[in-house]
Length: 415
Ligand code: UGA
Image (cartoon, rainbow, N blue to C red; front, top):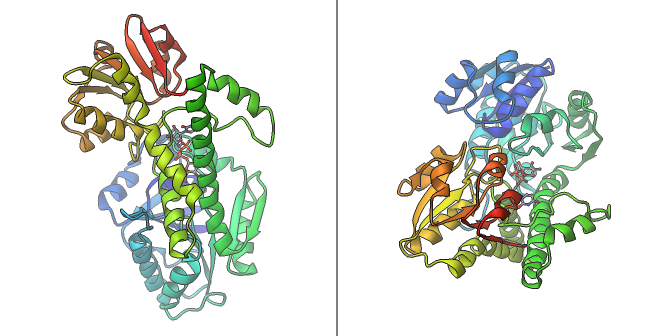
């Protein structure tokens, strides 16, 4: 199959590299010329486990020229859909990319399938993307097909998740479109669920919103447990045996960050309000998650005055095994510490460079130097933090690093 991928961010690059590995002929299109060059030189522009190796094994071509995809069978739309300040999804990139695809469709002779991977609020494929594509003069259903097939890739494990999906969701415009994508995806050992375009869009948002809610729920239980001197992790273990609850995503701590959960939740809230429904419960999840990031600093204040104190941070990434700092809890924590007049020293094995762009004014040091600070906050549960010597220190643990319990003063946020 000849596959074109529009957008070579996390989703596009992984989708392209993995489909190439599965024997397809893949072309990646991105307007960012530096990225294109890096990919053609077989250097991944992002850190992702196994991706560099994969790029070096497969035949894949990157370009900024949309016309190179004229002979393609399938076009995957993988551009980012960030949100603006009011939480609305910005459709700038996806609109531009779709207009470019429409130009290609105008000259294209054979039928092809457009597959939307970008996360969208329900209705966007039908109301925006199809009309934009039809401006090519070609008709959906006859000249081209369209599917919405959301991705469920965890950062850091994205290559594995792509190759071993737990489900494949195919929202289809019509049977012909769906059949074509099923043909490509039935190599995966996973159930395929065929549904409508809007429903597929909602499945993605609802899945991420549920995960965010589950984390917020266990954090709330954790905050109560902390007051009662109960270990939340033991409680979660007891709950997790019940299959209706499940044991995953019950790690209480300083809450969820990253480029997906906060963004998707905000987008769902904003789109729901636009439709005239006030999603109070989901808004509260967002509010509670914001508050959760402030708890470590509140706990710290019980033990030392923050003005002029040197506070060491272990971890800046939004989770381990990634260099991504988007919506990382570290952002709120650093802002608060600086506002309190503390001196901040931070260490992260991968994310320090990215964090430096946001906060050039703090010091980036080794983990040994962090250990020499007046007090330490653990923000990301990197494996290597389980091998440090915390004896004699003051440690506030946002992520349950058990070894840190040996500290002179140790406080977990929810335990
Ligand atoms: C998330 C979803 O898990 C993926 O299924 C989805 O495909 C992806 O978003 C996406 O929409 O692209 P990701 O953002 O990579 O994946 O990160 P998660 O592993 O979900 O973690 C998100 C945040 O929740 C992290 O800050 C993590 O520390 C926190 N978390 C996670 C908890 O605080 N407790 C938990 O029990 C689990």
